[in-house]
Image (cartoon, rainbow, N blue to C red; front, side):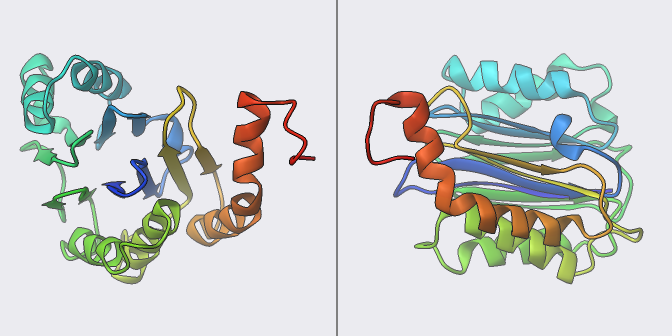
Length: 218
């Protein structure tokens, strides 16, 4: 009961995730990213430890596929897990265990991978991927949001979506963007509104951390 996409912008080096589900606080469990390293999605009977372990494997030099293979091999409950991995080079890999409930599907590509489970249609992840790829010059956060919106438009889940998360990492150890809607009737719409409010200020928040003496910020 989750649909998501992990993506990378080769131009900026940013890596990000957009995810939505019908349960509460999806961003607390499913999305893991590290600047210059990569990102991991873990969902369906979610085990957050796999996200943390995946980032550690990517950091050690493993590729997306090597990381995914190691995660699957390391958990005795792999049949319940759905995973996607993106490495710093934009390579992706996806896995859905035999106990992951339908409809489920994955749409892996260079620089992006969409996955979903308990969906209204298996066409949801491919629709998300197309939306993400449609305008490569747009900011990564915008492309991720469009993918989430298209996933909902393509059917989303059979039950109402309640939470959503937008995560983008760039160069620092902390996220450039980390916006969450934890319980809402229209969380993707709410996430869009949060992004529109946050986008004009995101650079200032970064500068405040790196150079608080900079006179160009308020």
